[in-house]
Length: 167
Ligand SMILES: N[C@@H](CCC(=O)N[C@@H](CS)C(=O)NCC(=O)O)C(=O)O
Figure 1: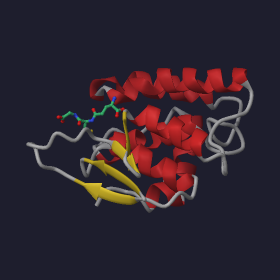
Figure 2: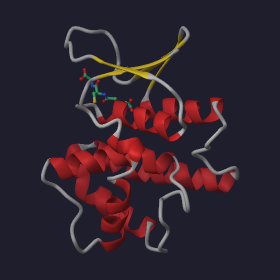
Figure 3: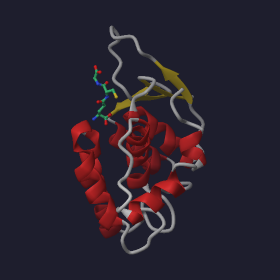
């Protein structure tokens, strides 16, 4: 039994649900929006095992369940993925969406389909909820960032994102 708890609109909780979907791992989503709760958003619960911090959770899920991997095997590729996640962490501060967009564009400039290459990796999954919420909030990717714009056109319709969208 796997449960993901979190605030309904929380982008950090959304990235955990996306990662679970990408890996085809079943889970129950139990949103809470009670200000008095002591739960952290997000929290993963698996048979008594509890974990917080969205990036820790998605790395755990990928390592615990090796099917449908969301990380490259090589240490260098994994380091580059973690560097992307660190740089795209700019999106996590609401006022920092311009630096986030500026960081995203060159990561895609070699024409790759996903940040992870031919398939999405954890850096893709981690950034999608923020791109979605910025678009919804009236701060879409600037038109002149061609690679980032094309990337988001591909990502926004991905089943893992659409099927886990907060509602
Ligand atoms: N670094 C944390 C950030 C989680 C976070 O900021 N969650 C927000 C909701 S989206 C939260 O619970 N903030 C504290 C609060 O609202 O009391 C993670 O990646 O999981």
